[in-house]
Length: 436
Image (cartoon, rainbow, N blue to C red):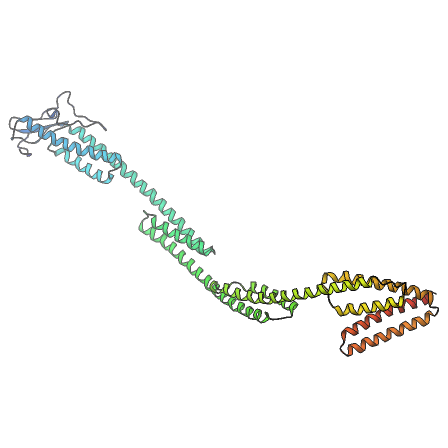
């Protein structure tokens, strides 16, 4: 068998009723079932294929009968037909590469006029043309998609670069901004399809923004480290004073100073994290020491004051039984003794002072009222009485001055109270004289 032409065959027209399939999308019929529709073998063994332009020699067959030769070339056509259909199917399904399909289909179309095959070459040529057109359309669509994807990728990277630049210029949420810049970088790496020149320009913008943010953040934390170091030094000074005051017994002023120290502590700001908690523990321990001691002392003092209140209540029971109308001098003497004991007992709880002193004053007022009434009834020499009261006032004032000079504040205070009492009586006597 030989595929070489041995001569120029006579033209031969395609028989009526056997016009090859033509037109876009027309199916390509297989040649093997009826190879004689598409070609012939002459007496010398030359093999011809019928085309729209007439017969074309495709080879020579001398290895067997003419039918076998024609069938051989028909099978070769069907192999070519199968290759074309497979190419079209892969392209239509999307599994094939349009660029490769176009190159293969173009090569097949160019080889078709000289192909050594017998079959419907016009239908096969139309099918190849369809595949070429499909591949060109697919390539154009792919190119448009690539352009759209490139434009979207450029737009997205521009947006990311602008966001990074805004973060670099404005953000002070250091952790959140740093996390966002890392997320932008991760997304940036996934965006493909940007031409190298544009990609390099956008990358420079993003990289510059990220470096600017890192510099600004570094500067912020360096300044923060300085502030925290200063806060640490200041807090250590406050701790030293707090610890020095921990054993103080000057309860009121020291408690006030601790309140001021707390305000200064808050104003000092935060020290470095690893030191701040330990500093606070020391400062609070000094405070706790002082206030625990003060609380214990106040509790002991409150217990003592409560006992004093109980003793004064007992004195009040006695004082409230005094009857100045029965014996004024005895009543006054009894009141003076009670007052002396009252002073010696000492302080009572703050909330009881007004109540207890008020009850004692009521007894004093009752005795004074009786005494005033008797004076008005029994003393015809009001002038002499007033002079006598004045003398008593002067005596007690002299006693008060003498006691204070001797450093006896309690006796001085008591003498002054007696002087005040006599002064009231003196003023009453003088008023009685004036009213007569």
